[in-house]
Image (cartoon, rainbow, N blue to C red):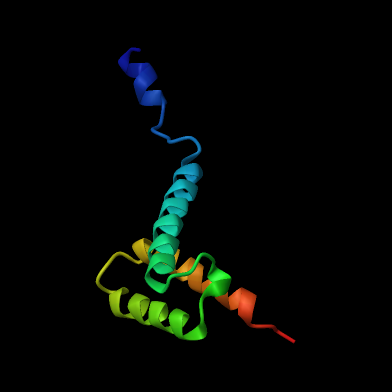
Length: 89
């Protein structure tokens, strides 16, 4: 590849959205595993409101400490629990 060809090609990362999906999946797995182990449950539906409040407290206390994306898995767990437990009707 000569210099002219290289200059004509802009740097790109095809399918970078898959990176995001994979990273979010890892964060979810790690977060859910830690929460399940701590509270001795196997599913989000087994968590109590008090358990979720404790996780929310952890997220709130650490939101400024870590990059927000690191807490994504915990936030996803909280959202999943809320969707399962709060009806809009």
